[in-house]
Image 1 (tube, rainbow, N blue to C red):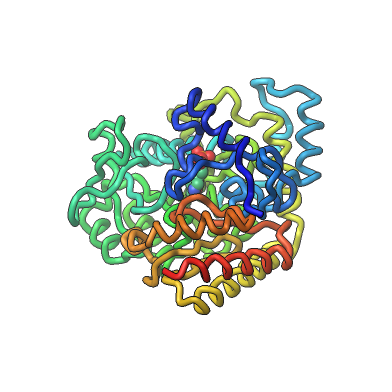
Image 2 (tube, helix red, strand yellow):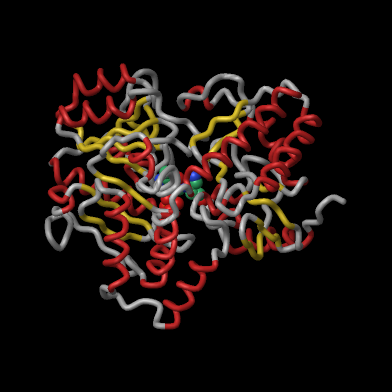
Length: 432
Ligand code: KE4
């Protein structure tokens, strides 16, 4: 019985009267997969309920935060209790101290930590700190990595081999874009060449240590180590954007998994358990430039909000005290990856699965996706058809080829089997 989306379609239409594109974040508009977006009304565990009462197994997890599943009881209870004591004081609370303390225990490279309200704010602030600490203006990012929508980071590689940045959005002054150099991810020669020529002008290199925002692309062997060495040698800072990988790939994130120590780390998503909470931190000598201690200004009315902090504390209490939790997530990821790959092989679909732990992407290309150029070889039309087919089967994938899907502790082996069976049926119909 095909799902009915009457109410969702009505609300999507009404939403477009009041919000740009009817959404509060572009990817939710389903532009990459076609059709009307689905509006949801509730969620529990690994399941979502849309406004028409259709149920889905969720592989978006609010884009990463829901590693323990939706409406995790201890998190909800912590939020309710905190809210009953007041929503915001604009002053420091003990919870902020405990959260910073817990983050430092889980991510030892962080010696001082500042809470903000979004991953965008965390990455924007970390780069301002890097510029203030080094006295240098230029930053390096990698094509395909996304670090939020601050001006310096909505920049793409210039034409040809030139790495000079050009705006990746209108509204970004070219004067700002030109201070952002963009390299190809997993390209050690490009990194060596840039640092040989201009390393002493670089304030920071920022990257997703495991990329989620071009789809899941792991670092090649030695790539992170090379970045660590080149930045160390040149006096540039190494900034790990772990907004997505933090607390997901290991209790201490990708830096624990790959045993690389960055100078600064940006965190978000899981940190807030679904509430607006993020943060940045790192070496004490670097973070001591942040106001009111030092000359780099950064502030926020709701930074360290006590209700969001209560959610974060409940999340990290579970993630930091559950030996084997991340191994179990990795095993679930492997089960799903193997199931999907078997279905791809069975129907010779032009697709491949790339995964690290509990984050994975089904790329509709046969090329190994090691960088953004390779990601661009994907048949996004096939991904869109696959997405719609899975949606009709009650499986909610991220509505874009260039995103990561996420598993949670709430997904059971039966749920994973259901996802694989649905994918098998959809790929059978898809016959490229
Ligand atoms: P926010 O400002 O959206 O909280 O965080 C920005 C950000 C920073 N760094 C990484 C690695 C991220 O993945 C993100 C945000 N991720 C996207 C999805 N890939 C959020 C979804 C959306 O934009 O609606």
